[in-house]
Length: 111
Image (cartoon, rainbow, N blue to C red; front, side, top):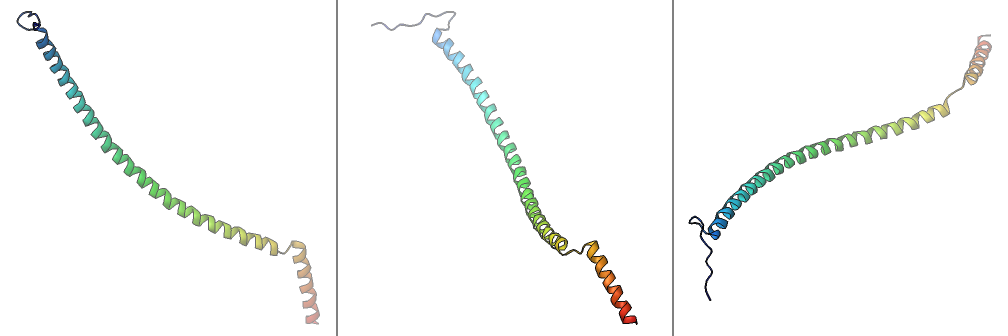
């Protein structure tokens, strides 16, 4: 069997041409890969910063939730007290009756 040797054109055979093209492609891919790695690192830094900000906001909301819970408790207490006050409140008619009665008693005592 004879080894097939590619024909040379202008002193460079086809294999050498492919090698040169492949080296160029490898170089381009290496450059793209480095760019992607740099972009990933930058995105990682940015996401870390964003995560820290979200954690800070979450902590603030936790504090606000606690404050609202306390306000809600106080509101419930106030509602209960207002309900009791309304239940025990004297009407105008009752007040007038009591006023008249006190006036009558005062008259009897004054005699």
